[in-house]
Image 1 (cartoon, rainbow, N blue to C red):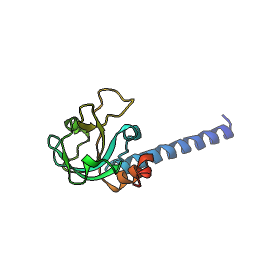
Image 2: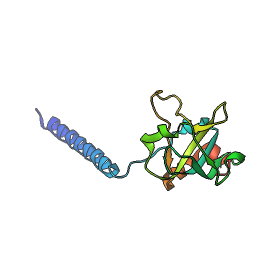
Image 3: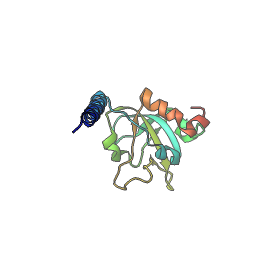
Length: 149
């Protein structure tokens, strides 16, 4: 082998090692701080977006804020409603607290957490903790801007 090939191999190996090191660094920085990403299609097909106090998955929720549309009268602040499928959200349940909930109304007039479209049917509906990060994402969605959110 000539010196040029050895030098190119050493440079390529060094760049590869640096890339793997950078990926390892990124992975270590997210271990304790997972990023929650709102499923945009879920919100785009939902009838109503609310911020609600969820005490337990089997109890009614208490509406704190209607984000979209603001004119959803039956879901005014302080209203308590029972969601038809909230108990299915256990994979996204982080304990009692405030959650962002995309809701859909059935033909029977009952509300439930909107399913994520185009996903496998076995996936449960998603709910999201109300944090600065998730609220910022919510405010970037088209309907939230149209509603003044």
